[in-house]
Image 1 (tube, helix red, strand yellow):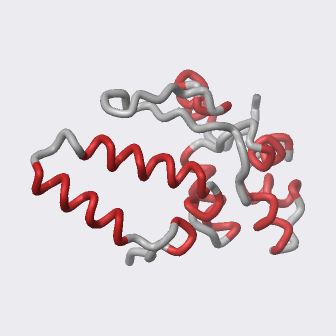
Image 2 (cartoon, one colour):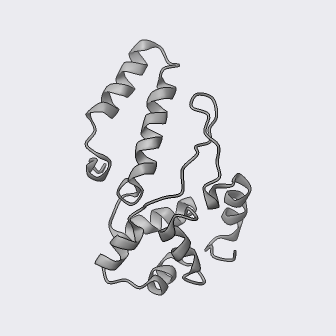
Length: 141
């Protein structure tokens, strides 16, 4: 695609299949997550900050705005470093940009926590159940 700031990361993510949301979900054993292509709030956040796709692409270190369009349409997911830069540029956490992904991952962690002893499981589930909704969870630091 030629859209990434760091080409070696692009090939790693492409080989994992996560550039286009094609990871499979095994609720207990697999380290992979299936995330349905779908709504996110990148476009809304970008527009509310008066940033053009072309400008966002430049800030993310992308060669064209094509990748930004894919991210906004939900047909591709940004690699990790690009996602971190999205947080910085848009001033929004990934859980705010991708609330459905956040909820799915959160439930997956709760499901996987069942394999731990009961004290560890209770601690993890208790912390996650007490968290605010994805778009309002506390910032660390």
